[in-house]
Image 1: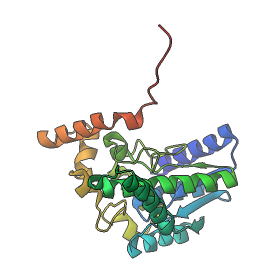
Image 2: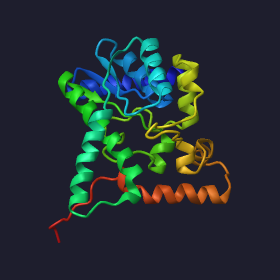
Image 3: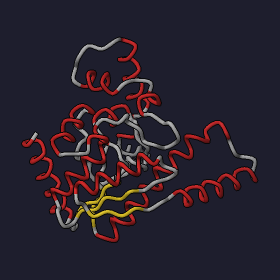
Length: 247
């Protein structure tokens, strides 16, 4: 673990040097992935790192855990409650769509969740620009491979330090880095709506995705589900398609 952490920290410092920025910023949700990344950027830039807590009707547990993480790490942080901003924005868009008879209630929950993720991304970039920092992503290998992230939301970042680490490996990093036990052992959730769970939403356990990524045997039905998710979300990982005038 020490070797892994040292290599990631060195890589983060190299990104800061290459881009000419002063430091690093990350959104801290109260989950294990953002906690690990917060610990890593604090090590990489002890005096120029910031964690941003951005509740949007988030559970008390998530906010409490996020605060416990930044307090434990001693990282500079700011809390910005985006609930009213998200609600006002969504209601304004909804009203305009309804006025033009274009509103579809079937996807309301997902639309709100994606808007929340993209609002957090915009907030992070506003803060990062103010400080001349890079925005650091928190996606792990399982999330990246299956596309379990919001395009231009939590997927809208400058660098990805743990994208090659499985969820299980992230947990090992968290233990090594001294992340609070309540965060290490909690059920993974993006906390985008009440009672939301990553594994329930995906319909598969992280342990099975990790096993698949490591080339281990898993039930055929789960293998098919993972491969379908990967194929369906390819557009999230690829560069934007564009029309070329070249013949």
